[in-house]
Image (cartoon, rainbow, N blue to C red):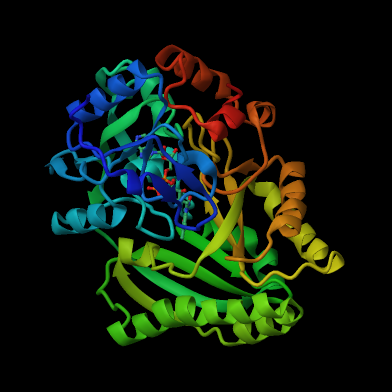
Length: 441
Ligand SMILES: Cc1cc2nc3c(=O)[nH]c(=O)nc-3n(C[C@H](O)[C@H](O)[C@H](O)COP(=O)(O)OP(=O)(O)OC[C@H]3O[C@@H](n4cnc5c(N)ncnc54)[C@H](O)[C@@H]3O)c2cc1C
């Protein structure tokens, strides 16, 4: 019998953050060293079981689900080292992004760009290509300089652009199918301040000025309230300072109470009375006010997100974004859909990561959310058809219906990725139903 750290049978069930994915595992392991990860993988292989590392469960797809061995990464969350000269910082793979941000701030360093929240683990975030919005700066995985991982045969390898480059390319965004990442080395930069400017703006104006807003700001995004003509536009740009953070009271009121507690209440009313949603959205959009503040980059990029929803997000070629959003607007009206969470629109530069949704093309992301407990089927089906017609690539961690054939056609380096996977995991130890669907085996 193995002596590896495992958890009691009662904990062998798992649910993701949104509550829309469940797993019943045969075994749970919580290793605290790369050697224990390797032992867990070898042990599972010997028993003919599959293995899935899991982060904080913030994916909406079943990407982290397993009925085999679940590897929880929480005991592998330490700082390995930070080199002030190069800015390279290495942390264990289970570290939360929030903890990484704290550690970097202590050292006067920062990531260049981040997504909307910081609750994910570093390896989970890079595993599905988590991104924020940026004119010049790409996803979190694009900021990775090196990885250490345990492969299916139990070997521990390091990889980077210079060392096992193909393995590195494949493992950077891999949905956990290339190996269990045990440490991540990030390229960081000196800490910086962002000036955040948020204001209501009419949708027509945002779309008319889309090119200007997108190219004249380092981090531009907007949220459109369906059934209304209004958006909230967010522009974050670097500044020398001084810092002018929101007061603790205002931050709590606007970011925690209004954006989460109050908004969840509004959504609950809409869920109980869907016909009222257009009116509710108009009231919610009118309640928006402008604000400007200057704060540490990670505090501007991320905010708490406590109300529960499910999400689908597609990456479109930049030139398709405005017409796609116009089509969504028309279809919501024509099909009488009731949508109570705003649609989020973000940007990314082209990058070269094999499975990045922004691979090889300047990208605009359109994200569709449905409040927990409401049926998303008609809305997501309608929106997805439009996304597909515009050559959209689905976020790996957010709901979609695409499979291997669809995805192989829109990712130029898809087969390169599959070749590395075939070499490193021919027996598909790291597979689950979702990865079989999207990778075809
Ligand atoms: C409220 C909310 C806000 C979000 N905001 C954004 C956003 O702004 N931008 C964005 O792009 N996405 C966003 N997402 C999606 C989220 O960032 C991704 O789904 C991310 O992958 C979740 O990270 P996690 O740590 O929870 O990983 P999990 O969901 O637990 O796992 C994701 C994948 O990573 C793999 N993995 C985990 N650990 C390892 C490891 N050690 N080695 C190898 N593979 C591993 C898993 O096997 C799985 O395939 C958001 C999700 C939620 C719920």
